[in-house]
Image (tube, rainbow, N blue to C red; front, side, top):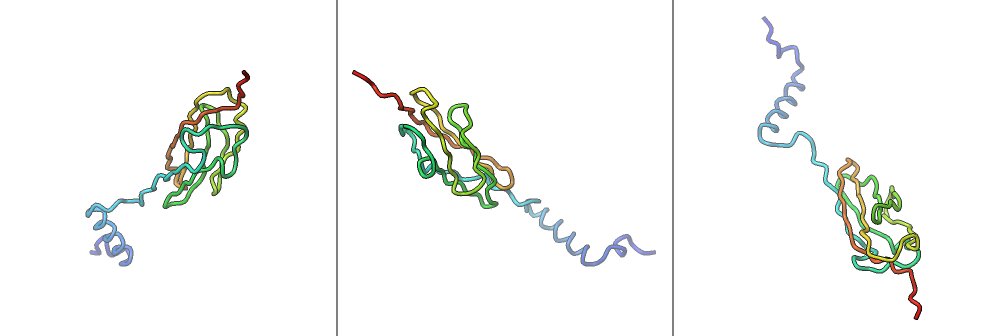
Length: 131
């Protein structure tokens, strides 16, 4: 009588045994997707915004070991824009806001949809005081 294992090719049995051994030793079944690392380049926390910010005046560094998918820029509850490739920048006309303090934030997504949120506080200062 043939055993059930004799019908499975030997190379498949070896791979299956290796996987079973690795899993029993605590190896993860899938590679862990790393959430993005985010660093604000501009504006910096506490900065005053005046007029339009774009390019190097609205930028972050975002990296992940599995690659990046997109970055979404926000100020308060208003979405500024989506960026789908590095360099990660936004374009925003700060005159659209009343003067005051706002939270500017980004959602950065890795290629495996892991998300990191990073925020800074900025001051909108477009009004000119008259004496």
